[in-house]
Length: 93
Image (tube, rainbow, N blue to C red; front, top):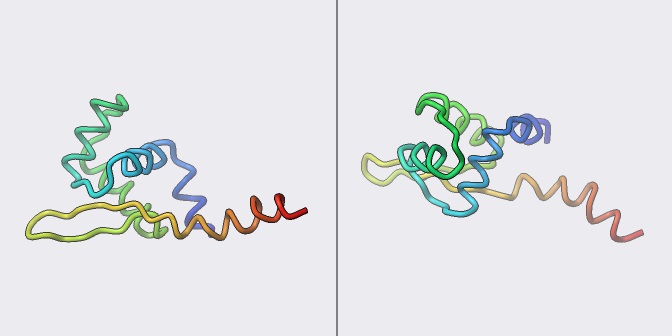
């Protein structure tokens, strides 16, 4: 769970997850372009790639290769223990 919190601590990584939520399955090039045009973030491709690595290590992003393209998909499963621990218990009391 610590990796998930570390990944979510950075605002750029949260924006990347927001972007993948609105349009899942993007390449690095697509993500970079949309981060600039929609969110006003001007991070380099290398920086976005490093953020994606952190998100992937935390299990929040999964990748799929298709030829020479690598597509990034959001994975919300690592958030389930957080929801179970703090949000669902609150509703049960």
